Length: 483
Ligand code: ADP
Ligand code: MG
Image (tube, rainbow, N blue to C red; front, side, top):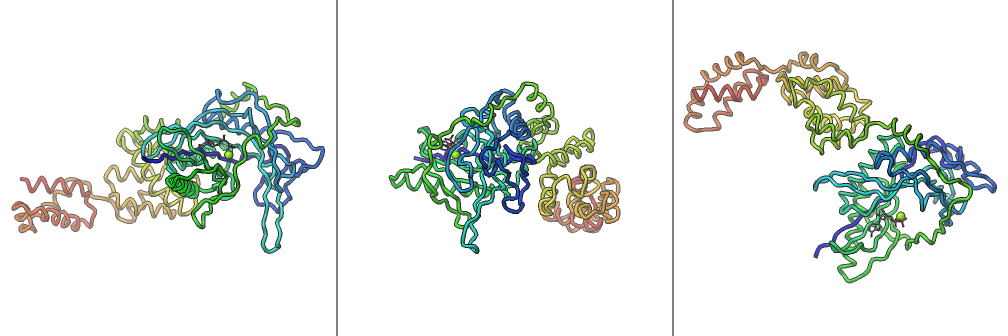
C-alpha cells in the first residue's frame, strides 16, 4: 500500500517596523553587533516592554487578508515561553499562546492537481531571539543581540499539505501575500521569511503519523528538498518495521539531507504563562475598520477579476499576481490595449509579461516598477503583432531593442525595416510571379507532393525578404493552387 505525506508549515515573517516588538531599538539589518540592543532587549532588571502599535497593525492586516474581520481576536494575550539559551538573556521569549491575535483563515494554492485551500490554525505576534556567532578564528562564540526583540508574525498552517509541491506552492503564495500587504520585506537570505516544515507519513485514511520538524528553511528549494528527503527517510524506516521519533531536525543543503538536532519539547515544557508586564492586547472595531479601508485589492480578488474580465487562466493569473508591481504593470498594459479591436490583447500581453519580460527583469535583478520597457510600450508592441504589422519573430527583436532603451516600438520597426507585408493585393502579385516562375513545383504539388507547397511558401518569403505575413501567404497560395 502507498504512503501519504502530511505537511504543516510554521512560517516566521519578520514584520517591517522601524523599531522592535517591545522596545524602541532599530530593526535595520546588518549593523555592527550589539549596537541595536536596548535595555529591554538585553533584559536589564526593571525595564518594561511596550507593544509596538505598527507590529499589531501589520498582524491585523494579515488577518484581514486571510480571513477577514472574523479571524481577528479583539482580545489577545502575550505569554512568556520559558527556555534557556545564550541568545535569550531574559530566559523567556514573549509570544502569544492561548489567545493569538489571528485565529483561522486560509491560503488558496494552485498546483498541477488544481486549486486547494490550506487552512491556517493561527498567526501570533512574538519577538525574535538574538544570534550566536561561532567564530572559528577567535576560537570562541559571541552573542549578537541586534535581532533580539525584532517583531515576528508566526503563521501556523493546519497539516493540510500532501506533497513538497503543495508546501512550496503554499509558501510562495504566503510570501507574495506578506509583501503585497506590506507587512514584511520577504528577504529570505536575511531571514525575514523562514519556514519550519512539520513532516509525517501515514497510510491514506489512517490517523496522523509521528512528525519531525525541520527548522529554519530559508529558500523554496531547501523547503522542497528537505521535505522530499525527510518523507523518504521516514518511509524507509517504517517499511523496515521501525518507528519514527518525534524530533527537531536540521536540513543540510550541502549534503541534501536532514539530521536530528534534539528530541522535541512539548508545550508544557515551556511553562507558558501570561506576561505580567504586558496588558492583554485589545483592538477596537474602529481600528480594524480603518485598517481594512486602507488594504489594497488582494491578489486573490485580482486573480478572479483577471479571469472574468480578460479570460486569463488561473496559472497565468497566479504568475501575474506574484507581486503588486507586476500586477499593476499588467493592468496598465491591458488598459492601454484596444480590447474592442483585439479582444485577445490582454491574454497576449499577459503571456509576454510572465514570459519574456519577467525573464529579462529577473536576469537583470530588476523589479517590474524598474522595467526599462513601460507598460504602454509593451501594449503597443503586442498590438503590432495582433494587427499583422510584424511577425512574432520580429517582435522579439523589437523587444530586445526596447529593452536597451531604443524607445517606441513603431520607430524601431521602421528603422529596422521589420514591417510585414499584409496588403493582400501586393502578396497576390508576388504569389502569382512565384507560381509562374516555378511551373515544375506547381505540377509536383498537383501530383500530390506536399513538400512542393513548402518550397513555394519559401520562394514567396524569399521574394519579400521574409516580410510577407506567413498566414496570408499560405492562404493565398492554397487558393491559387486549388484553382
Ligand atoms: P509546535 O510545533 O510548536 O509544537 P503544533 O503542535 O501546534 O506546534 O504544530 C505545529 C505544526 O505542525 C502545525 O503547522 C501543524 O499543522 C503541524 N503538524 C501537527 N501534527 C502534524 C503531523 N502529524 N504531521 C505533519 N504536520 C503536523
Ligand atoms: Mg513548531
